[in-house]
Image (cartoon, rainbow, N blue to C red; front, side):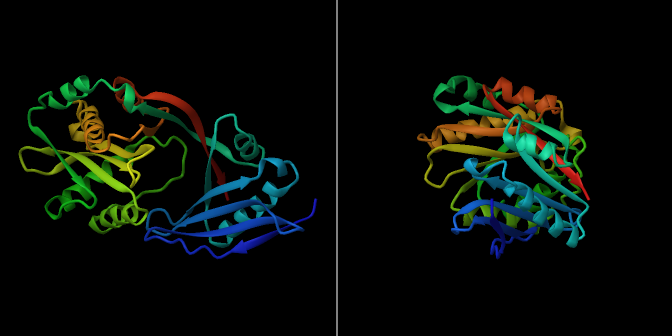
Length: 293
């Protein structure tokens, strides 16, 4: 089979990364597949690239994916990256493809969904109303309020010890600027960011957070982005408290929303238990792969 690989100019860039892209096309110009390579640019992740590769089902096993992969890996090397990561649904053609081409499995993720039509509203309300002495909940839409910005950015470091198993993910350095940029990126996509946070009653600082992104039209499924509690405040039920508050919020604010989706490292037992207790149902597993350059 004859085909061409053409580099593309990808205008998408953010404060923390930029992308390069390629398209594979046949002699007739019909697209056969594509590859996108995200190059992280922030300190702590400048060694890393993330690959997304897709080949039309009818065009597989003809070398299209291999050629696209070669182009992406060559670009990663020229950019002095030491690791390329990619994700595939467990047992899918992409899973087999990556495993056969030198990538190694470094992390397994459990994807789960909460069907909102099945939620026991009274039970959720009861969970939110359970007292947590020394703490109080707060919530906001979009960008964090100025008075909480610094402690919220500091609380984001609670994600640093999230189980990543063998993934060479580096360190995401969170500061107020990055927190604001992340919220603005969601808004530019036309989506709605809702954050639930736990405040320490002694000083009013953020010690835990749970972020939820909802489609701008309030239809379909929402997506949990991150939930974490500062280490010194763990083991007190704060993660479940925050997630229950997020569920209560969407039930009241977005009645047409169908469900909430989340993904969790399979080794993160405490968060898997939180999801299970709230009624989230596993949908599939995905494998994070890494190629060491």
